Image (tube, rainbow, N blue to C red):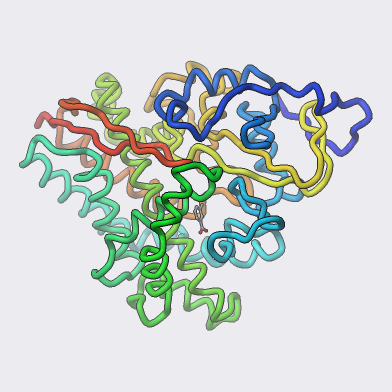
Length: 409
Ligand code: OVV
C-alpha cells in the first residue's frame, strides 16, 4: 500500500474532518504501554491531529515511509522535535546534519558517511568483537547482573568513546547529554524541562570534547576534523559534526542492545534459534530495532500546503512520525507483534529512511551483532530474575533496569 502525498488539494478532505485521537505520545502512561495507543493512532486514519500538542501525526508504515522520503515537503531544518526553529530559539545550535536540508545537508552527510563507512568498520570490527566477548566472559563469571547497566550500557561505553577518540575523564557526561538531546525533541513537558534545566554541565563537557586537540589521532572525531583540511567542511563546522557523534552514537546503541537482550530474555525460543545458528546475530539485532524501535518518533515540518492520503495539511505544520507504530503496522508486517530473529526486516524505519537514515547504522549493527554473537556462542539462555524498570524519555524507548541471570552452556 502506498501513501498519497500531492500538492493538489481540490479533491482532498478538509483538515476539519481529520481524525483527532485523544492520545499523548509523550505521557508516562503511553511509555508504559504504547501498543494499544499506537493501534488507536494507526486505526484513526492515515494521518491525524493531536490537539494536545497541535501537531499532525502518521503512525502507519506507508505514510511514515512516504514522509521520510519527501524531505523537500517535510523538512528537517525547522527542527525534528516539536519546536519550530523559525518560531523558537533552539536549545543548542542546530545539528549540521540532523537539523539540515539539502543542499547544506548533503555535504555534512557525505563527511559523516565517510567517517562511518564500511572501510572504517573493517578497521574497528576485530576490536569491537573482542570487547564484546570479554564483556560476556566477565558477566558469565558474575552470572547475575543488570543487563542494562552492566551490558547494554557497559559494552558501548567500552568501545564507542575510545573509537571516537575521547579522553577518559568526563565520560560520565555522555549518557546524560544524550538523554537531554532526545528528551528535547519532545514537547515542553516535565521530562524536557527537567532535562534542559540540568543540561549545562553536560553541554559544557561535550562542547569541549568536540575541539580538535581533545580528539585522539585515528578516532572518528579526528577523522571528522581531517575533512576540514580537505575543504569539504570548515574549521567551524567540524566540532559541531563531532557533536552529532556524541549526541546520537551512544544512547541509541545502548537502547538497541538493551532491546535485543530484553527480546531474547522474553522469547527463549528465539534465543535457542540464535544459539543453533549464531550467524543470525546481526538479523536478531535488526529485528529488535524493529520490534522495540529504540528511537520512537521524529517530527518534520511542512514547507508547503500538502495533501497526505486525502487530508490537507497547511504550510509550517509539524508532523510527528511514529517510527515504532510503523514498525508494528499489520498492513506492512506479518505477525507484527512477534519477535522473529529470521524475519525479513528490510523496510523497517527504526533507523529512519531516505536521506537522513541513520548515519551510524553500521556502527550500531556492528555493536549489536558483536554482543548477540558472543551471547549465542557462550550462554544457554537469559532469565529475568527481578523487577523490570522502564526508563522514560520523550524519544528513546528502553529500560532503566533489567535484572537477569544467565545460564552457562
Ligand atoms: C539522529 C540524531 C539524534 C540526535 C542528535 C543528532 C542526530 C545530531 O546530529 O546531533
